[in-house]
Image 1 (cartoon, rainbow, N blue to C red):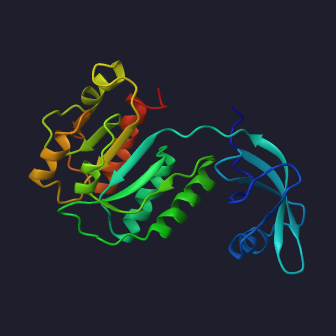
Image 2 (image 1 turned 90 degrees about the vertical axis):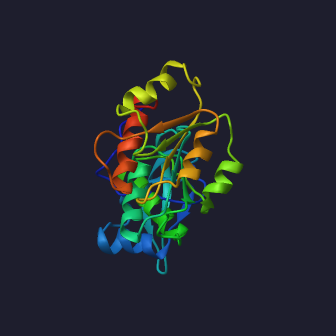
Length: 251
């Protein structure tokens, strides 16, 4: 797999990409390339859309608008990991951080989950999507994760897919060693090679009836993240790193 080029500007685009195709730019993208980066006509830009891999393109400046012309593919498209991140919503700045880091850590789907003790009940889905795209652009990621609409924990449990592994972080879990807790899943002792969903609750923790409902689901690991109590956004990074190291693509 060719290494990412972090010296060339990189943009996410919605349209298809193929040799010679003209790619329209939003006003914000055109302003960024021409006025912020001072990119001249013909200057190189990397583009990706989550379907066609990454392509080298060149800037084409017109009288009223700027566009890109695709030239050659620099990296082929890779299939995304099936790693779902489920989380209780946080306040704006912290949910921005969490969304960015979840994308960097390889999450393929982000879904807000409303629990009994969730404090922030409103979620700006479009803002999350913008943060996800920016993280993918900056880190050479080819796949932008799906951003799902918020769902209640009751609805999540009721509609759960039993062929997924659910890892839910709970400071009340008895197992103090998170690697040991995840190891049965790696060896096949728990469920074999199932896709993974990670659930991080609110800072107030899960209600007791929520814990019972989650533990009653098939293929569940209740995970404590060591001896320290972590903020929810820190727990997201720590838990995703553990999953990638023990079960995911860090191995």
